[in-house]
Image (cartoon, rainbow, N blue to C red):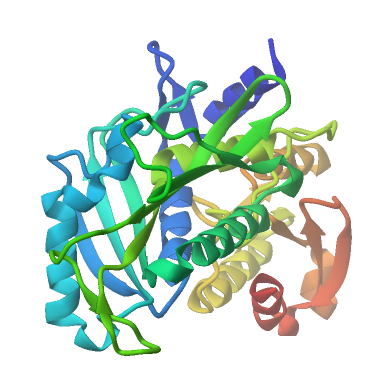
Length: 359
């Protein structure tokens, strides 16, 4: 079995995704939770953008064909978004400006290695810029996008900016296209984001230049992220590492469960202590493991198995309680990535953890 085959098998056993009979991928419970967190990070990216909400795509504003990638400006969806910008966000209706919207579609972006079972959610950002600075903005957005993906990766070196050849029907003076690719050795590459530059012409779309006040048709840099496919790519990224363990190295900001609580059960007091710590962490907004949020194990062997399972689910930190915790308030905070534990006092929770997750 290939190393990526092992990744898919491990992710399925951990409840993140599964590969269907037609080789398409479907997210499971934990995968959907991860996708939702990734979407929230996208929503918080470039906070000055005008958010235009959600839509269902019955037209080819997002299409699997290469040519339609550049024809979005002629779609009813783009026209509607432009009118919504002018109507609802008049102060942002100038160059440069950013529009964001989510689109549910049955058309998947082309990815030769795997695609997600439709429907899929496209996270779309339209950057309307001055035409004479279009290439400058395009190159800057490429770098920003690549850095954004690298930030959430367990292996930042796997991301590449790949230029795409333009169709013969497209004027190279008016259009450019690149993909942000996530590469997995010799086995495959997956496009996690498409960036396309299209210069508009005519009087249908005109905006004032923020510098000069002159009204002109903008150039549009469109970013399209297929949420479910990007989620699968990041999950495989976290699983595809050279470590001997089966740890899932998810970025701690995106991990569906940020921490867990475990101990060897000695008596009822340990269960009460777990419940107390669980309540403290939940009220602080931290995401705990599924189920009870804590595990009471009978012996050291069972505790090790629980920690192994937590690593496989990508839980960044596990709080290890013992009789010592009842006596002096000290507990062990185990790091998934280093497999080392540091001693902290119960009174430092949850601020200690919150500061870690802010980094």
